Length: 289
Image (cartoon, rainbow, N blue to C red; front, side, top):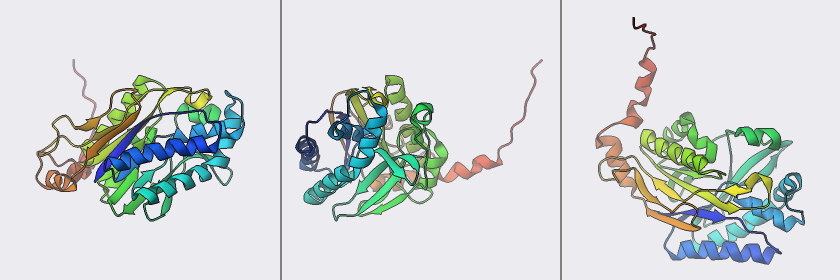
């Protein structure tokens, strides 16, 4: 498959026509380049707050507006997925799960299929003051492109979540992210590369970029990237493709799943298969005089 990972700036819209025009342009560009799967970032949906008639810098009002408007935005992207024959992981945003506020992304298929993935692990700021909560389960999306998983931003920094996915034969993990610092971008990028290494799979990361007048996303730094286990037949750096930091646009990569099969069965190491051997290890304290 060919994947497109976004470095995505947030915009303030005067009306829905402006939002739809932006999404139409972004999807058409990636589809026109031959992408089969488009990856938008975490909290990319916060720009919907501008359509809710709220004042800038009002996080509570922004959250409520996005909760209300996110389904309509996903409807627009679902129509674009069908029109262009592509899969899309839509920008995530706050949503209500009963009385719980969660961070939710929609996975959209070219045939109109739709499924949801909620973030599992909350950053300290999401917990307080935003009160966003983690929510399960972790889904395996069985698609025409193969089995795909989603770890939203901070989730990518926890190896057991990635392990759950690769044990279900997931070959591609999508990592939509939103980070306010360059350090945060690199934490998620390193986490994505680590999950690719230990799971002998591909990972793809998207990012928000630029400034925005809503507290949760007021500063954004990042880039799109696609990563792999550095082994036979794959890039020695573990980087299939990476965009320039904070340069808006798509980063593209062609992914050959047979290369993963070769690495998993005949690579220089067997990190996927050897994972259970860790449980036999013992820890002892040794005092050096």
